[in-house]
Amino acid sequence: MTESKTAVPKELLDILVCPVDKAKVHLQGDRLVCEQCGRAYPVRDGIPIMLEEEAEPAQIGRRE
Image 1 (cartoon, rainbow, N blue to C red):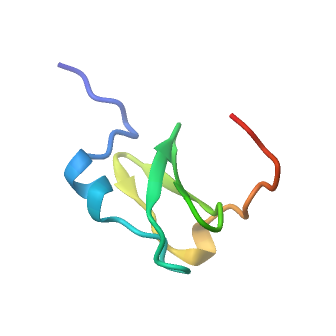
Image 2: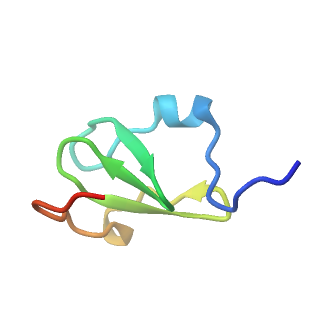
Image 3: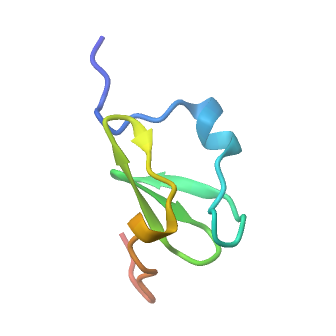
């Protein structure tokens, strides 16, 4: 069985929140995106990097 380098266990996704506004995040490609502010946090080698300074700013009006 091969796992994606960006795979994050569901148990971890269930407890992660945005460090800025404490809203839930969801996996979108190789990033965890905040449901409230839209910041996108990178996932590197399966490890979420939940630091505000590592986040990409919200993309207003962007749809994937």
